[in-house]
Length: 186
Image (spheres, rainbow, N blue to C red):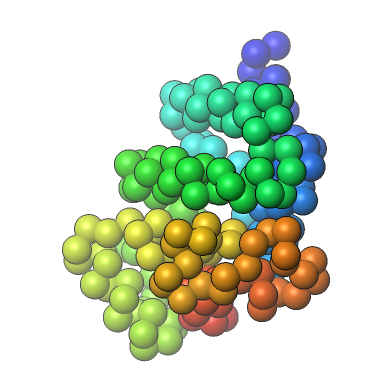
């Protein structure tokens, strides 16, 4: 029973069942390379936010219960409230990904399997430096699937809040770093 519940809550349908996720971060994500691309390979919410291994998965689910609590308490139930907490929520996720060496990213992307000759020169050079310096994916790709919090937007991302974001404008939803990463991967 517990295993079934764990797996049911590990599906994108569950993740976007509340309007806080569906109307904010899911809208942003739908306009990125991780949602739709030339190869048809798509990362879902759990692919990026939930470890595959049993122990880390349980720990992450316990951490996520805090996010559900914030929803139940009404602390993120409007776009304005969500955006007010966006930097804090993103900071927790970035710290988690930094601590686990961006393991969820590495389930699909791995320095060892990258064909640098197929990447554009800038991406190939940056990836090789990152590999040699022991950096992890989240060090450079914070805005790859969601709009960055305003505190992080000093790196060149558009200053657009989820509430102001046009629903069908891919370019406005993708931070500059994401667009560069998308172009590099295309």
